[in-house]
Amino acid sequence: MQIPYEALTQLPNETLENMIKEYLFSQVEDGGFDALNGDRLTQAIAQCKQALQRKELLVEYSEDDQSIAIRRADQVVRNLDIN
Image (tube, rainbow, N blue to C red; front, side, top):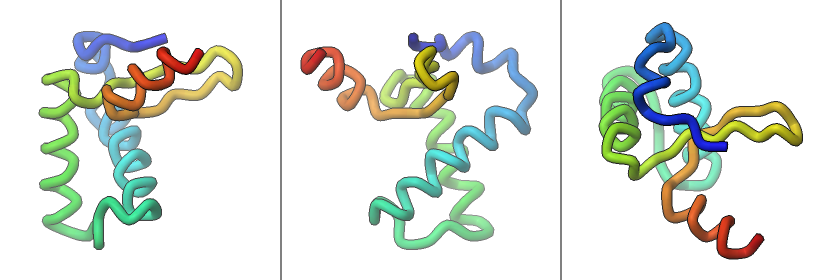
């Protein structure tokens, strides 16, 4: 289930930033970023917030394992096509 951006704006800022950080750190592990520290992390969080607003990134809630994750929109579409 996708969570609309408008609902994300109702969350405490710290909660949203923690979700974004989890997403960003997974990108570091996958080689998507070379490093995330200090100013680079702050900049990456701001870019993710903009991408969420533009719907380039989406937030999904999985009822199966009761988890929430940020995914690229093209990944979500691909997953729907496979299922």
